[in-house]
Length: 107
Image 1 (cartoon, rainbow, N blue to C red):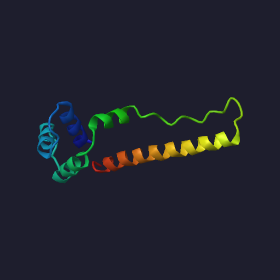
Image 2 (image 1 turned 180 degrees about the vertical axis):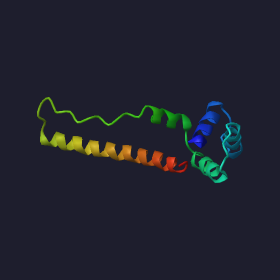
Image 3 (image 1 turned 120 degrees about the horizontal axis):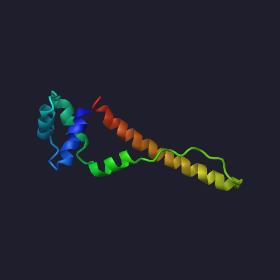
């Protein structure tokens, strides 16, 4: 986690996020930097828009609970809703997989 924090601190300070700067931040915090983790982190976030990642991680909507319908709906409408829900779940799952993949770099 300290590697991610170092990256966020550099981003907030508008400093380049590179191996040298991450190591400096970690050393300043009294943490011994693992060169392999630092390289992996820099490579993993090379094409990541950090501002967008923060926005989506901080305000990701929770999956709504299934509420009973006020009026019965036609079977075709219910089928269309189920297809939309499945598509949304697939999108959410791929976001979770991406975040989980990045988290495994720092475990």
